[in-house]
Image (cartoon, rainbow, N blue to C red; front, side, top):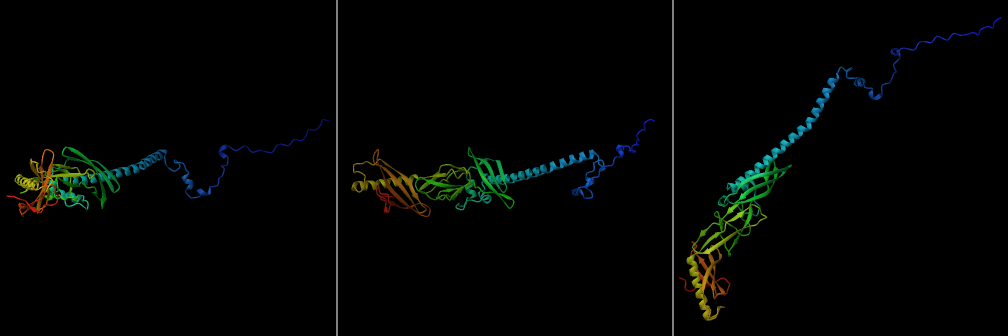
Length: 347
């Protein structure tokens, strides 16, 4: 009998693998940081949100333009403000220079006050000068409420360049550097009552003048003539200005002074009471103004003894209310004290 066949079990029925579209989608819990109701919406693609890529691109470009335009607008506004500041300051400085050029000393002082030690500068003093010209303001710098201005002008044929400081007060620009400078009269001898434009020039540095070419007033009096060399004020205190003043004895007074001085010299020569040798010959005499005041004028009479020697005789002339000689006093040769003895032989 043939051998029996082993039993064979049929395999269990196996389901077919699911199709791709039937595969279950993995589930992922929403992270807590996106648990807001619209967080998932924010993760949606532009198309699912109802926007096209074109809209997104346009929005990005517009945003970039707006972002770039804001700083640029600020810069334009700042430049406009800076330009307005510079224009305002330039106008203030030009007004100051124009007042000086027009002879307006009072107006110039109102715009930029003088130092406390300065006396008044009159319009007549400034108007008597040859005015500055070719004024310009080539450079203006503003830093907040302070400014610096470069100015140029000509005094005669000389160009002057100065830098002026300024500050803004209550919205208005004010120049703080004055162009007026002290002028010291320098006398040939000791003089007083020297004037410019009819205003007295005060010794000691308290007379201030604005830039220009000036002349001492020429005055002819009964005893002397006062005049001076032309001088320039450049508006720079770093370059001191001196007004050279000269006084000349009027011819008739000079002749009389020379005559009385020679009489005094011969008298002391004969008496041997002065340093003039008895054998010396007087060759001549010249009179110069030594000092003056409203009440008197003191002269220095130089006597020529020989080719190399000179002796001085002081002559003091008292004056009346009109400035004319009223009394003459003579000193001894070589004596430098103020004369108190009446002069001999004065006609």
